[in-house]
Length: 377
Image (cartoon, rainbow, N blue to C red; front, side, top):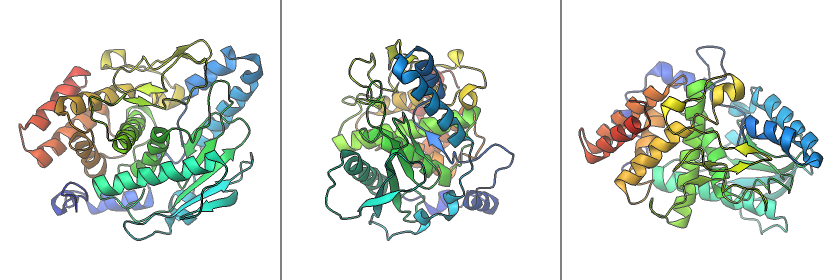
């Protein structure tokens, strides 16, 4: 087994009984929802701009997607701990099931493909199946993790959600994908890193349980971007120097001025289009965005820890998942708690780097330098 895969006994011993009980039962220390039971890939500020400045034919659809997405984010989904997805499979196995909603919203829909079944004629179905499998393989082979919950959780996905729905989300138990409107956004099953991003929300739900508000919510989004990017790089066998460091490349329809939804390499530069606005992500704490929109800017301020990971990975070279990824994974699983701040993440990754690679090691120095460069330390 990979020596940096499963948490070592020494690391697990640092987690108290209280922490374990809190994680397993998803009990939050306050009223803020923990673990992001419903997390969407498209931020509210982008949909809001589209509903005001997009093509006339799309404005009402964008507003409906925005309202629908906000309602979903406010829900505590009981399926997170009790649904069918909790029936596990043995380590090294996968059980993917794809459902077709036929533009309805009552989950999960009609079963159209199961584990080992032949390809469908529907590209949405095949992409959901293939990309969820790649993500599961990544977590198993790199980190020794047995599915989202580390207990063999089934990977259920529903496609064709609602009508022209411009979003994809993890609802606490499964993945759900909209078709996109075809004018600004293409189908949401298209991008491997988007599916890796959303399934990582599930990993976070079962580990640190980062509350979806303010800095802890931005960390929740950032861990999903970081691991979504690593999944794509792992599949393509890319080095840190050869990776594009974009999230959602190829999601935009032809004619939209933008490369992707977000950039870990250069936050704030992913898109600039009159229909969806300009990428607002900061790369440094001096530009931290304050306010209550989007749960305190979780999709915006995530650019800061995103860039910190990019700086660590590029300083260490090679493949992002080999060292930087292991530091971030250990921190997510063994250090952070639901209401962690950026400073907590910085201290946590420093601690994990020291435990994994040694105090004052090259790896720990890279982590310290990165958090200093983004203004957290």
